[in-house]
Image (cartoon, rainbow, N blue to C red):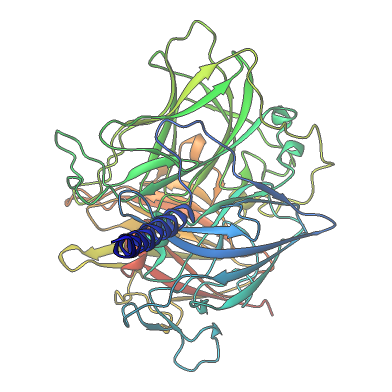
Amino acid sequence: MKTKLAAVLGIVLVLVVGWLAVQENQKANRGTCHRFAPGSAVAAAPDLYSKDGFLFVNLSYNTSKDAAGRTLYCFTTSDGKESPTFHVLPGDHLIVTVKNKLPKPTSAGHMMKVDNSGAQVCGATTSNASSVNIHYHGTNVSPACHSDEVIHTLINSGQTFTYDIGFPVDEPPGLYWYHPHVHGLAESAVLGGASGALVVEGIEDLQQAVRGLPERILTIRDQVLPHNSPAGSVTPPIVPEKDLSVNYVPVSYPNYVPAELTMKPGKKEFWRITNSSADTVIDLELQYDGVPQELQLAGRDGVPAESQDGTSQGKLIPVKHIVIPPAARAEFIVQGPSPNVKKAQLVTQKVDTGPDGDSDPARPLIAIHTDSNAAEPSAMPLQSGAPGPQRFNLLATTPPTTTRTVYFSEINNKSQFFVTVDGATPKLFSPTNPPAITTKQGSVEDWTLENRSRELHTFHIHQIHFFLLERNGAPAPVLEQQVIDTVDIPAWSGAGPYPNVKVRLDFRGADIGDYVYHCHILEHEDDGMMATIRVLPRI
């Protein structure tokens, strides 16, 4: 009897130990890409700083599941830091070694050859569902292999790849970011959270008002709703197409419990916000007891506001709200609420993306509390040095060498999306396509970007920036007359003129070779709305 009981207990013990091991393994897997609980305090991402002209980083690309069963993705350092913020100076080199730790795909799934000839292959030759690469969004760096190249660069499961991103000495000081950019997989990777901020230091030399202010870097991301959630809808009850988060603190439908932030009452701070969403447009507004507060805009898309006019100094622009398309950034000064304010929130207002667009409703993002003893984030430098050369100096007044019309269109019932030079035949993107546009280093081009579809699109071009000149034939608002790298084009109503913007693109820099322009609503990019431009060396 005792022998049988011992045997039974032994079997039970083995089963319990096995069960505990499975639970620990699942717990560890869930924790690979860490996420905070709703209503958590906003925590800063880990900061990594360059030294003596270099920043060396080892990253692993990981995946796990959250409690709702959603697939998460993340980059982590060798000591476990997730989505670190890279800090570099103009002229520095960022050396990133990436190890793809995703499991090998169990089926062919997403298969795509990156080049017919193989001459331009950079890494693996064929993508699959586990492939990754990294785009250093907004940076004005080389599109060559092992730099910011996304057309032919693939890192497959188990492979390691090293980037050497050399920043030019005239790289504008401001906020950039990094994320995967494998065609067909970009949306899922970014929705899964694989992104981080990148700061080129020195904005205080062009925007003196930010000197010494407490600095917060806030990354807004979107993610799919849990599988049992209703589909996105603009009619009551309004359901968002995607949930949002702030520094990985979810703000989830339907309760929209905001992230928490505590600051000293009445204290000015410098907030640097990147919309690292795959698909969601945000319209930021700071509200104190429901009243919009003035924000002092200091930078857009990595370029200090009003800084490229030949003065080598920026100017603050007072605004009450800031529309930030997916991938765009805004840097601004806020003044904390007084102790008399009962409800202080950073919110996103409702964004109309058109009859065929996504539902991007109003919702809170951050609940702001005051405490005179609140710990403050680290302060901006008082001064780094004299302003350096300005990469896009006098772009607004430089005559264009060429003009073009480029338009966005789609076959909605087939999920096919196109970006096309006027007069050409619409074509879905493929890495093997020839360049849709060829230009020369040193040129300045004016492009009219038309939206011929019934949903909003967001134009982004790699390697360079552009100046926003016009909206629908009229001068763009002062807030938007800036050097930027991402711009939205509203939806077409179905009748009348196509909505359009006119931008002036700056090819006067050092970057030559092939790179891409596309819609940065990544669902659209993955479904074909991207094309290649080739920049030839000046003769």
